[in-house]
Length: 565
Ligand code: NOJ
Image (tube, rainbow, N blue to C red; front, side, top):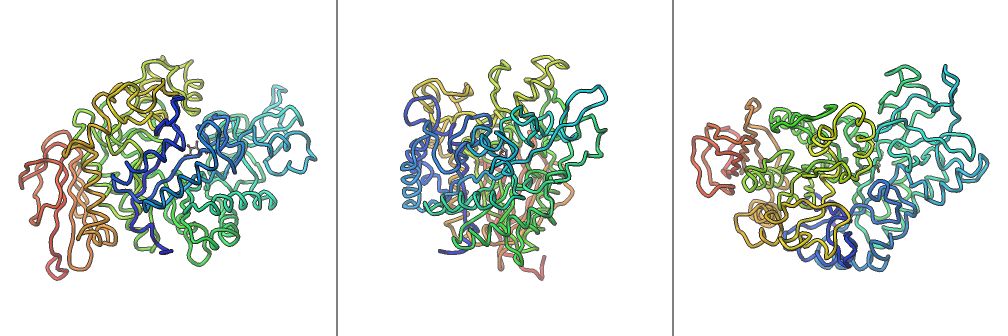
């Protein structure tokens, strides 16, 4: 097998429950993916990442797993998983699965045993600690650590009168990577899927496998207040030992791709520890740094406002990660958003300029370096939810947000926030056609759809040369199968204009040729001196050389001579 196949890979992330429902129960499934592989082949991608399809009580969209080595009956069978892998391979599509490493469901047999008594053999599979007594004489959590989904990072278990650690929801107890028997079990999980022929993993939440096991209070808040102090369980040194061991035990024997999700806390030096040639652990890291450059980051509650892409910040973060990775010789996954984020079109594009801004996003993404990941629905410019009722928001983090804010804010204020920032946006059922339920299912989908499937859908766009879908397809071809492929897949990366507040301009150079991408992220004309050269791609039929129209993108190819630059 070619070792570095991912360097010329355009992958497509499938959020399985919302992709395509083959059996009419309102929820996407494995057979739905099998049936749509030809669609993906037509689009031109050559790898897929499928979000978890393992048995799950569904507290966190399948990331709460009750059996790591099986398929949830509502989504299919193990035989169908094998069929999917085989069919994908026959079409030249690699298959990556989600390997969920930080937690199980509280309904996993390991946890049911673990919680039953302090001397159960599985007790140390999880992290347990006694509670404290606060000044008012009440029993409270072992320390002041807060969880990602709000509330404390601990939950009480009456069976043994102790607390278990959980950095996501109450139903997602964290597993204890410090305990060798647990590490061996998790290695076996990876082997199980690799032996079925998968080509690698997107490794969920790996940044959190090492914790401060002293369980001392965070100093970021008082002992009886909640401290949202991710340093207590993120990017801690010990986790590189766990990952190196896993590499030696499992991955090095399979020659597969491993991409660890490290969220928002990791920086380049952390990435270099994960992707360390001297002490191999994993191949790449997914971070979230370039996902929120639209001014909405880290705001407690969002008010109705027009989104303005922060071009300077986006450029700065791309330069930091892309130039840094290229210089350090490590691979990098490049994407706009995933299932944890708002829709790319709503985040960086503009629904009032739906077609051009969606086409612009395709042009920028597919001309950047790295292994490209397209999130399902992005290729047709699916948008954020337009939900009008709090009940429609189903995601665990959205539900906790509603719980924590409903006493302070109105329902409309909470909904405004969630429509911009909530994870439900990424979970919307795929809009296949303009027929009932958007062609996603023959019965009512498990999650409310966006009504705009009537004008935003795959079928219409596949028949339209000027659609967002057609631009994704053309750009994938340009990147993978054209005379320009080596520039786009192997070329270096530089920014040509470090200052401009509205236009992002970068260059890819390979040998003596270069491709310049110009991208106007504004809804108005912006004057800009356009360089000479052959226009390889544009999202407008006509253009001029003095500036860029609203959301205009242009790719220019020309010879490059270092002496004249
Ligand atoms: C990251 C996943 O992307 C997210 O969806 C999930 O909630 C957490 N990890 C916990 O598994």
